[in-house]
Image (cartoon, rainbow, N blue to C red):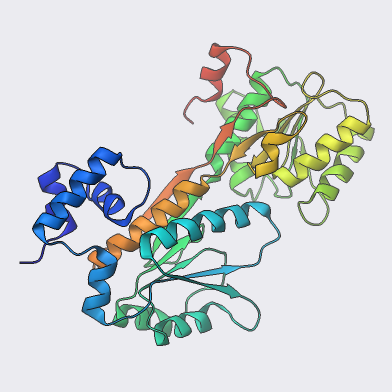
Length: 344
């Protein structure tokens, strides 16, 4: 008699997700509970998802990860976590870096021909062709995307709006009268970051007309942050700055320092991403942290579950970005913290 994850979960009185994590070696389950789940699985003769699928399908490979070389540091951090957890869950991973000569649909055909067990797409790429959708379904190869939404497939997505909602509320509730938001989107066509800022203003009874946007030139780099901050300082009285990402924030901090402006006493600064260096600056950076660990865990968990139950409906998991308070924009009271982190 075959034993399913659901049966083990029922007997242990835990969720299927907990059983999946325990048997695949992923974090999030206590050692004591993990040992009991593994002990029961062994007693019942359960073969872990990956091994069972290998035996059942005859596929001789593990997980394929499709990604793209991206200049943003947060993408590298996210992929590093995914590679580490993927290796733990599947034992074997293959990383395919997409380029102009090796795009998504060609890579999917390569994965199918080389008999990989599952695929995770960790980048924004073009749509999957109808032919490849049918091919993946016919071969029962799960595809899960991270921070990209493909209709009919599992997705682990970021709710960036939540983080910028908190960031904007922090600047306003901390007493900033003239905050500036470095963002290239428009109020008529806002992206996720700006949408969160607009919701924050509305939540405080303010008009979105009061949002002071400052578009930056080119990429969201250190140089762009340094340049736009110098321009802002010439024309505006500013006491708070939200930066589209941490690289912009690094340039902003440099420009403020060279201008003799103290952070956070005179100007509060908030970034977005939580890249590793942000914590180790002379004035550590308050930033919106992307849920990189949770994204990788969710993607792998859905992939393992899909191997167990391929015909289930596609799932989408939204994980919130969250404000991480440090020195560049501190919180000085419990009451202020409660107001800032109020649910939108």
